[in-house]
Length: 405
Image (cartoon, rainbow, N blue to C red; front, top):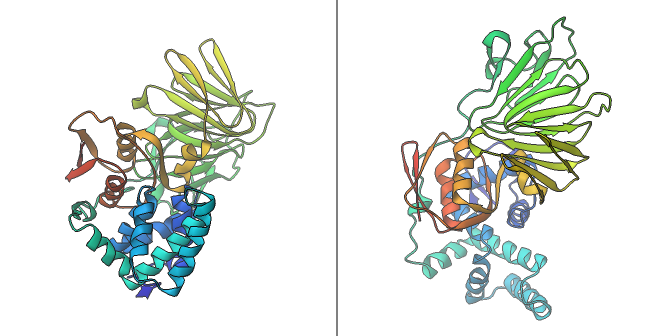
């Protein structure tokens, strides 16, 4: 069915509710400005991108800062209509004061482009302007999707519980944990008392995230290919958990019982705060990023204290403290990949944790990439967006992705 000039097939109620032209403009614009979208908006964006190749092309162009000048020139070449005359005059007024387009001038251009998409004019101009542009990267190469495997809970003696097979509202383990929602991936503590607290390990596969509430009320979000080991009830003087992978913690305040995360030979100690830890086995280092509160990082005899906006990277050589922008680091919780001047090795490592793929580079790559990409796209479409925004070319053969400079 046609919505706002775009071809839409079958979609969810959420999509239909949000698929007005103004919403499309707003979401695309804020995404291009690297603002964090809500979970509902990210889901909408994924569905909108999957709806048609034209939507993907438009997304590519609006997401690539280098396309803006060419886009404006293309718009100015067409026969003026009243709406474009108003927009163009406003842009010229702003450009007299500023050499580059301001936030709202660019928003006006985005709105104009959306309007042209509705009439088909924009894509006609694009084809006329770039007749030699190959569409190979825009055609689905293979539909490799994230999240096929199940999240599991491992108890005492190696007992494995497949959480996807448990109906929401049912208890697992000793009746201590209740599965709130399979679709949302949530496990919470319901306060049942056990004589001997059991150790549990939650394991997430490629392409799936999970969140749980521990016995003390601490909330933990687990990224893909992550495992967290914790007791069903905290006893003693400390609350200790062990992490391999990546997780975001909102620690319940208890100054009398510090919360400690052990990861890659280091420990992060807090009493109540919010922070992210990335500590994958294949990285050779771990990174703790503080969002709120304060943490203490310890490794051997070395100790580092962090304040919000700081990150501690722990390596064999010691602990390095950095000032960072926290939003790209925790963006995975909003179902996006957010890369800032990232190497392609880093990018493909992230993708290989999300999609069931092996990656092969044909040559060393010096190029770097910055951009935000949705996590819920088929791999072929995500690589098409990545290819558009950089200078790499990708080939998919089965579950192997070859990266060519």
